[in-house]
Amino acid sequence: MGRKFVVGGNWKMNGNKAQISDILKFLEAGPLNPETEVIVGVPAIYLDYVKSNAPANVQVAAQNCYKADKGAFTGEISPAMLKDIKVNWVILGHSERRQLFKETDELIAEKVAFALESGLKVIACIGETLEEREAGKTEEVVFRQIKAIADKIKDWSNVVIAYEPVWAIGTGKTATPQQAQDVHKSLREYISQNISPEVAQSIRIQYGGSVTGANCKELGTQSDIDGFLVGGASLKPEFVNIVNAK
Ligand code: PGA
Image (cartoon, rainbow, N blue to C red; front, side, top):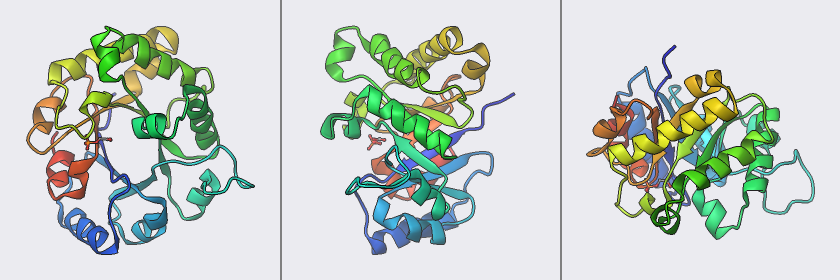
């Protein structure tokens, strides 16, 4: 069974109502390949607005959520709140959450587990820093990040993994198609051996890090790359070309 190509846009902390209405216009105009699943990751304050105004073929994701339904967690939003406004996806473990907000493997894994139990689908982000890559630790790091999640969940059917090397995020330095493919392939082997061959075969692994309209096609030809998580370029009309890379 083929894996459906899945392209996410991660708007990060960008956009205002005017800019978002421009983004919704180019998404509406598309045309977006119906064979590709499209998800936009929206700042919390605009989730309801985008959910209400996005074209039906574009799904909406939060960029974070907490591991409880409700309570005294000032500043956080819950999976139940996302479900309440019919947002079905959440991006968890982005490297900016890990680095700037000190989220640990453990916390991210707990959030992934709670989001899944709450009925959300999850884009779980992993990836090594430049120092880790240069020290030859890429696999060790991404396997550790996957294992933390594997220790907490059993059902991977609503998980997409986003492999995003930290050195490629927002830097204009994309991983080469071969560099990305190598890590995706190792991840699939790790999953096959440590989770299950079925999960390894069916799970979608996105590449993220300076994906553009210009480099997406070649990245998309790699056999273990099942889509992209796109930051900067997801705010621009070229996002349509990235959705249509395959
Ligand atoms: P970028 O960001 O495409 O701007 O490099 C990717 C991401 O952080 O998801």
